[in-house]
Amino acid sequence: MVVLALIALISGVAYGLCDINIGFVSAITSRTDFILYFLMFFVGISVGLHKGILNDLKKYHLKVLIIPFGIVVGSIIGGMICSPITGFTLGESTAVASGLGWYSLSGITVGKLAGAKLGSITFLSNLMREIFSFFLIPIIAKYLNYYSCIAPAAATSEDTTLPMMIKYTNEETVMLSVLNGMICSALVPVLISFCYNNM
Image 1 (cartoon, rainbow, N blue to C red):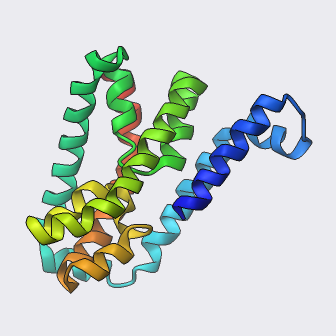
Image 2 (image 1 turned 90 degrees about the horizontal axis):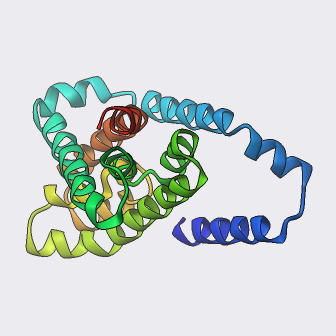
């Protein structure tokens, strides 16, 4: 998954630098809002496919909300800390951090709000978060605890980093990981818009 994402990124950069015009690609890039809607549609499908989600929410009570809450707060604080370092405004920096690892959606969303430059930075920042998660999850599982493994993965904890959770944690953590990923994924567009417009 990570390799495919990097190939897609490099191919896109090469396409942009070559200054060639392929009708299909130009049509897609001119209507990024449709891509955003499709991504949100697929998140809805992902949530709908988890038939026992309501029972799981009842079973784990506050744990279901504490983990994504901590991830969101930690990510936004990280964005605030990075603001003076990067030179971006507080709103821009926290919007980038609000991607919570979901690089495809966050890159498009921030790109529509703030332009291609910040959209690209958002994409790369959140892609790197996902890549680092693959290396951090085994270390965190070994030296801290299983619940903490969910934090670096954030929104990706229900899909791309889930195999790592299955391998290095237990069944309860895996279930919380799926629920956390769904909650974080649903929050990403809301957080980005809020942070960019209100911070």
